[in-house]
Length: 205
Image 1 (tube, rainbow, N blue to C red):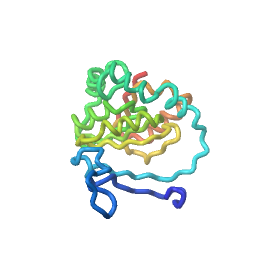
Image 2: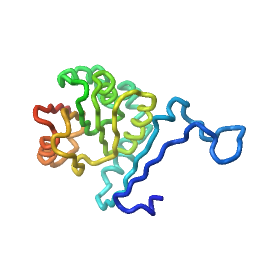
Image 3: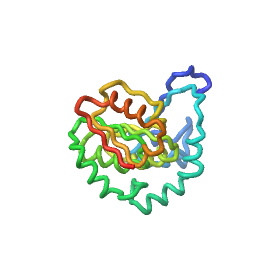
């Protein structure tokens, strides 16, 4: 199907609806790998893109620095949903400075495995858009999102190439990520454009 799509085309699908597949009765359901309550929630929307960008750093992240087993070891040290120092307690301290209000929209660049994003969305009823260059990070974050009742959107993306309309976000949030960006000035200009008037920025490195 991906081959049939034009560049820019969209592929939408829903995971198994907890019913046996095919047109004949089975004794066992081969699609039963999540709990039934999750099946109304799992939808995917993919877009085909044409990219000739260097994926070297992304491969380094996923194959060297942030292998899945390594990520889970970090989580064991720092607490569920976190891969950096301080875990939930530090997140609570920093997020309190943002004075979040219900209905606001936040952008998290370099989300790790989503602990801070779930906290903001669940505790303050805000929408959080999450991007990270690491496929492994986003994959583990998606697993952690199952069963949660909050509005968090995930994407594997390079923050230096990503674009959003102006005045989109109330908050920009990034933990221990910006140190990896060479052209920080260009990135901050993008943040300034994307933020609404009065928007706030919180960065730790």
